[in-house]
Length: 294
Ligand code: NAD
Image (cartoon, rainbow, N blue to C red):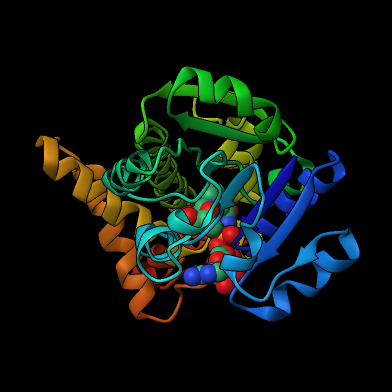
């Protein structure tokens, strides 16, 4: 399949590489030229603009930071909706506001173009391994046709409902992950301050009810004070703001998400926005004056 792929950051680059490995022909663009070079060696066609990627393709994929970026590329600045073939389909893998997904899908529908919103969970290691979890919104027949393309990048591909349902599910995922990391940081810090070694706490509880994928991935990073991203605090603030916006529209109570958003905003203002979200630990370290150790 001929695929346009726009956005070659932490996630987009390994995802695009897995599409190449699966035998697809890729036309790629990122506004940071330095991030594209590696894709040439991997076998992609490097394009000078997003408009250049979409000529004669069967599918356009974006992996961009947030709603304004996707709207800019598809509708407002680059206007790919008007430039891509009417027979092609658009799949947005970015994590954006579900209302923005619906707005883009409605604009594309007027042109006769189908869309899936297909955000992912799993982070960079799973993007590299091709084992991401895709949560998808869109029509069943479009999903069935393009599921094999997503399966080249992920090990779980689930249709959650109509367009927007993928990003609603992703917001749920991001709320649970944020609160989980905060609870982990709070618990580990408490345990150490009460005199028990963090490593012992981790070993003792990871196999019980408190154990989780978050704990296995983030507790070692916290004990190492290794906050290299991974998933940046600033991107999680973006997701939590989208959660607040979505909750407002349906009057849903979200006290836990709101609280972790405030904690992350403190870290952002202290200059930690580019750290991995496991740096939520720093919030507790700053308040307690004690650093978590092994
Ligand atoms: P990133 O910032 O590393 O990559 C985004 C890329 O988009 C950058 O290379 C940037 O130059 C490019 N870009 C921005 N605007 C552009 C434009 N107008 N035209 C062309 N390129 C443009 O971000 P990421 O970590 O790869 O995340 C991408 C999306 O995936 C986000 O929505 C994020 O929330 C989501 N996500 C990230 C992770 C993770 O662990 N990093 C995990 C799951 C989901």
